[in-house]
Image: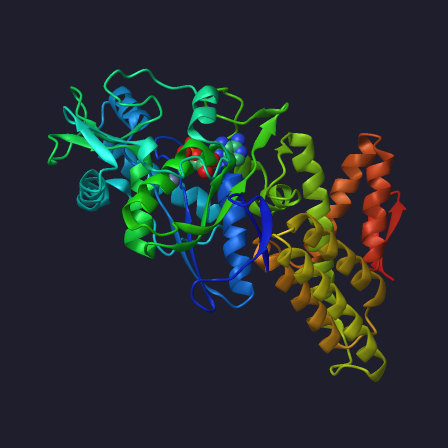
Length: 465
Ligand code: AMP
Ligand code: ZN
């Protein structure tokens, strides 16, 4: 398998630290609000990466944190007149609800920053002892100049970074690029006792600390959204490697944004949709298929129209599944026919191609095209005269290729007749709207499933071919 490593800017062969195992840390949400579909892309992408590793036989230890203490948390809790802990509890619960609805597998561990305060204090102390950090009247800063390789993930040295960065002017720092790893308590803020007085951890330190405690000094993959590469991941590297003297992560993966009108979807621009709003209107499969239809390192644009066309595309895949299920209930031949053997072999070519695409840095876009090609082939070649074994094989194969993407696993509860009626109603509606293209498309879709429509004075009737 090949993975694009942000650190080297190259696709590299994936070689795990321990044979057959993957240790993976993904930066998770700050739990002060519902997550939007931009955040969701990051979660879905790395859920897919994890599922695919599992599909390829790896055992994955997957850690994704909850940032439950920072400025945004404190501000929101004050506005709501609740404690930061209550706010965190609430939105962690909401996170699970939406993530479950999005068919995101639960992480092996979801550590909360506030549950690691003792370990964070230990980490900060080690950095001070090692000469990498300094305490100024209760605030502790990491000294970027002390870590000689600072900037290696961004591919820039300290001077270049300094020119490009927006740096908060703080006269107490020795260098403008130094960053806080422990913050002194301000009035009304939650705080913990530490050797430097009452305070709370900075943001970057929590990930270094939890990755170390849960996965070890060196991990296979560290991942997050593209905006985290600098400064968050750069700072994590500095802290972790300064402390251990070892490489922090072998592979750095970053997923690109979802944009709206070519601007990043974000809370501050107020151009976002929460995952929950979208999931009220669209199935999780639609949203996942939409997100995975682009390569994870390519930005994608969001619009409702795009979701609608993704839904139609997904319907094509599910129609094939329903069709196979219905054929299975009617087929007369059980065992694979002699003449089908070659065909089964030809279907395996799709699986090979799919694996080739996914092995190539998780190219879900091309892998999805392979699934569409497979379904087209099955629609043309499998019919009521085929054997049950072949039908079942096809059904299993479609589901198998959908599973690393977290799609195509649903069985329609209703029977096939209900589905046909639903399509006929949809066609009637299209005809009323004079949308002849859609009405013809539905007729053709039904024909593919072996259903013929007859327009009679008493309405539409259907029969099997
Ligand atoms: P936050 O809750 O802001 O800390 O973000 C959680 C995760 O979502 C991080 O990994 C971000 O990089 C990612 N993220 C934020 N906005 C977007 C976006 N528009 N598209 C994709 N990922 C995003
Ligand atoms: Zn992080």
